[in-house]
Image (cartoon, rainbow, N blue to C red; front, side, top):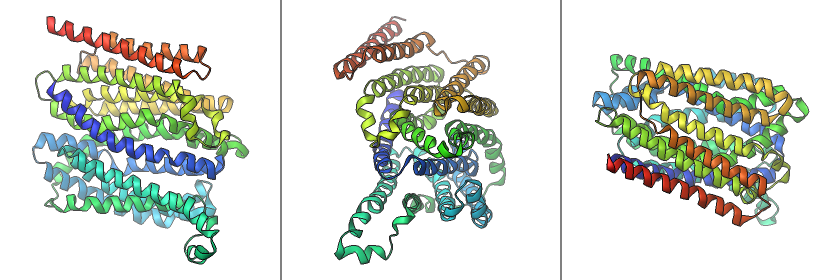
Length: 487
């Protein structure tokens, strides 16, 4: 239990930065949706999706590879130095190749009139890539508070600049005493471009804050170690690409498969409602930050598999509660999306919440191929999931628009979970309590169904259903502990 308590504590700290950061970021949704039409918000969503996709390419699995070899080699500084020098070289190559082609990239993305957006994206990517390994080292060194403080600074700067450009500057322009000063650097027609300036500034500042951590390391490049890191991490690159495909490709496909006159609007509505799933994804993100180094640290210890099984059980119990809470209080939560034109997309929320829950289960299941050096299976499962995502999006979007995209995401992650579980039974069997896990999932879904049939903005009913779920979990966990004690 000591290991589980440590994981819970560190997840709480990482979660603090994620919750504060993502909730602050979530406050951009009412800002953007009140200022911009769904079509403009759709353009921003597509470009940020491109950032996520390219980020995976440019880090090529080195983050997880760093955790693996820093633990295995017992020399985290040499592993960090080798990995970071590799990232510097590839990032410089990316800048040299991408910046001259920014106009072509903008044309391919149907935003040729906003080529400067692409230039900002390229630099945002460069600084985010170079920050990835220093962040990983903070996690490995068990410095969650240091990690959290830098993440919060990043988000705070981003939010602050958004408020400055989209609220304060327009207000000051109307004031005679400030108009001339504001006009010297602020151009209202630049519009959503100021969002990219905010992202760029926060990414650059984050990189600067991480530099002291980088400079403490003695830089040497171990070619033999680098080859091992690349060999281990390369399959994870495909897994990462497939993961981002599962998360982001629907925006691109909606943009290309729907009629041109509605495509950007549909993407904007879908992306805004997708944000409501933040309450699930921010917990999963916090869990990933704490769990990945924990999984590797436990790998060589006695009872590791039992620890992994317990983590999975607690994870499903808690995410089941998140699923239920967000859905039954949706009438309150939807108020964060200020423009009613976006509310037509709320039907995707329960589907995406469940998809994110399965995404988290898949992350838990992935421990078997990571600690057993069989990362190629991660690539297989992820490519399988990406093919499902693309196929079902192409199949469903023409008839169901973004509703089809949401179902494609759920089909993908649930299928990946099943595939990973089946193969784990053969190569690295972990004694998951499948019966209890399914009980938690079915309980959450059943209580949500009761709410969907009976509710009419009844706050009391929503609260009662959440309490019933928590009672079910507490009773079953108490029985579990009693049974374990007897044995």
